[in-house]
Length: 284
Image (cartoon, rainbow, N blue to C red; front, side, top):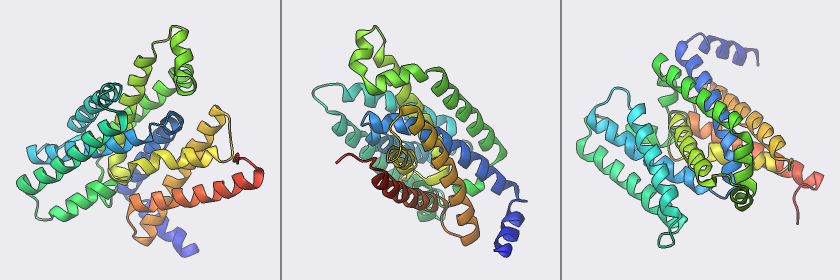
């Protein structure tokens, strides 16, 4: 055990490891805050759809040759989040069909562009890193950390400032409209924030595993707590803890960071599921 701590202490001396931990904690915290809202509003699939859009945007940025692809990826993902919300409200195209259209299309076009215009000698490695976040979290620059930090602060501040409004549209959107609240505006805000979180999480767990980072902590907390505030706080603690444990285990054992974090999230979910059953927290 002492050898593991010594090894971890040695790795912590490297800036890229500290950068990975900082970004990992920030992304996990942001994901958990809005993950509860997505689960309760039955919009979990939007996170999955936008993650595929982010992959397509990353491919476009790589083809164009941008040194910092975050602004372009963020802009495209936010635009698609708005389009997804608007399209899903139309009777001719249901929400799940709209997600399938945009997500699968973006994933296919992104991979096609990377194959046709790629200048990399390791295309498979680049695709794997983008999809599963295998090494990208350990190659962050100081600029990436600052961008992630600023965006994370904006996400957290938005959640705190609009907490009551988000709570209202989450539990009873019809009542919120009846009281004069512009529910569509706050739904739009939630969609945009989710797009920002997706872009932040790309480097941590990759585009295919982002949904797990958003959903599992919320589902775990819901097995034990029933109050919205309690679920949100518990979800945040679970998400941050799992991210830290996953990163440390990945560093020490050499496993992929994203997959390791998700595996820890799954294990914690199973634990909370058992605790919830023992406490009678799950209604039969």
